Amino acid sequence: MATIIDGTKVAAAVRERAAAAASELAAHGVRPCLAVVLVGDDPASASYVRMKERDCAEVGIESRDHRLVAETTQEELDALIDSLNDDPSVHGILVQMPLPAHLDAESVIARISPCKDVDGFHPESLGSLVRGLPGFRACTPAGVMEMLGAYGIDPSGMNAVVVGRSTIVGKPMALLLLEANATVTVCHSRTKDLPAVCRGADLLVAAIGRPKMIDASYVKPGAVVVDVGINRTDDGLVGDVDFESVEPIASAITPVPGGVGPMTRAMLVANTVAAASAR
Ligand code: NDP
Image (tube, rainbow, N blue to C red; front, side):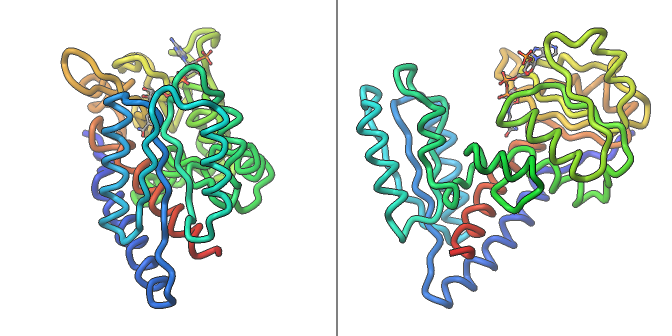
């Protein structure tokens, strides 16, 4: 029986710490503020934004809503980002992805001031991670590290396998694990004999976007398994890991829902309070 790594509980502790730091800032007359930019009317994005704004309210962060129509031009969006960069009362800027196809997400991310890049997606933030310098870390992988720490799981010396190489999850996850002294392998859709590579993992992180792909045949008995996947299926929300088959052989595992998901949102508020403190 694996230890179930309770992301909801760890996220609550992260929010509590952020709330304490926010109230200390308030005593100095500073209210952390997150500007939230949502372009278009994608219902899933709107629901993510609502949850993030609720988290902000709980922690004592002001969230400022900027809802733009789907037809917003690149120039209009750029002008909004510039004005948020210049506004000293805004500490963090979140542009909810995905953007409508006619907008250039990469250029929008690069336009955000790195000191307000609370999502940790800016090239400078990622460069800081590569160089081991201070900077905002992408919320999802940072949340995974926080969870491991909360459960006393030290990646040092472990063989860690990360399945997925996206810029928002897989790559920064691999770098954070490397920084924590794991021996890291990054896998992707061209990896040969993926199950065999995964079976070499003491710590396996699945960030693939394929419902329940990682079953027991990918997992070494006693491994720690982190499921980043969020997949909407006819059976509801499921991860990339087949929890039922993997849980009996893993030493610890994150569930979906209630695992990495709540951590991502908690790290966003933590980063926003840190951005306000830094200023
Ligand atoms: P991407 O689609 O950007 O990346 C998926 C990665 O998985 C790619 O590197 C891809 O390889 C790899 N991959 C796809 N199919 C296979 C396969 N059959 N075998 C091996 N590797 C494969 O996804 P994201 O990184 O954005 O997200 C991954 C998952 O995490 C999704 O389910 C997403 O919803 C979830 N997510 C959850 C978050 C949370 O808060 N819990 C936050 C962000 C994402 P290649 O590069 O070769 O194409």
